[in-house]
Length: 162
Ligand SMILES: CC(C)(COP(=O)(O)OP(=O)(O)OC[C@H]1O[C@@H](n2cnc3c(N)ncnc32)[C@H](O)[C@@H]1OP(=O)(O)O)[C@@H](O)C(=O)NCCC(=O)NCCS
Image (tube, rainbow, N blue to C red; front, side):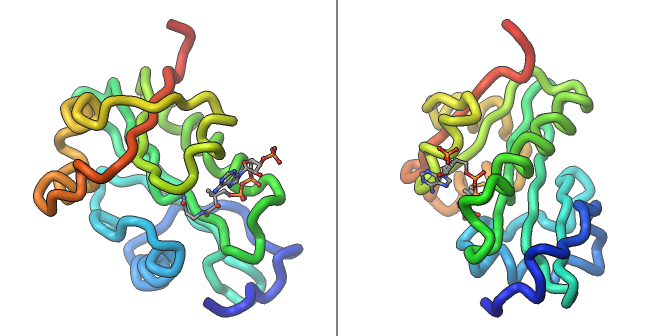
């Protein structure tokens, strides 16, 4: 992954469009996140590009069929820009957008970044509960079909006071 052109001059978050999918796929592959469903209409993703036009951050979510649950996904910061608060801003953005869409509870898969999500109020959850609540999402279908589900760590938090 190349060095971002200018981390201090990043554009703001913009909704990803179908034309962004190839660059977004490259970016998410570099940070080792799921690539499935990036251009699906049910998957909402925002990206940030630097002054050179390279994607340096992304964030997103997908809703369950009943819109009560959201799967937070594709939250990523370029490795050279991490640990400066950007990941927190991206995660809070996706959570706020999902809440605006009516979701009551947020879920996600994360094997490596648990402490990051715990700081945002997430607690470990049953991966089967996640898979049931969000059965129609691309990530759950992919993980169920590939057998990866049993190796994943699920996290969850309410989006509104319970
Ligand atoms: C996870 C990720 C988005 C965090 O981005 P970031 O910009 O470094 O996050 P922040 O700077 O806002 O960090 C917030 C806090 O979490 C901590 N933190 C961040 N990543 C962490 C990690 N992997 N493990 C432990 N703590 C972590 C930070 O130290 C910081 O703590 P502090 O407030 O006490 O200083 C980033 O590491 C990343 O893109 N990782 C690869 C993709 C990924 O795994 N995404 C999550 C799955 S959707």
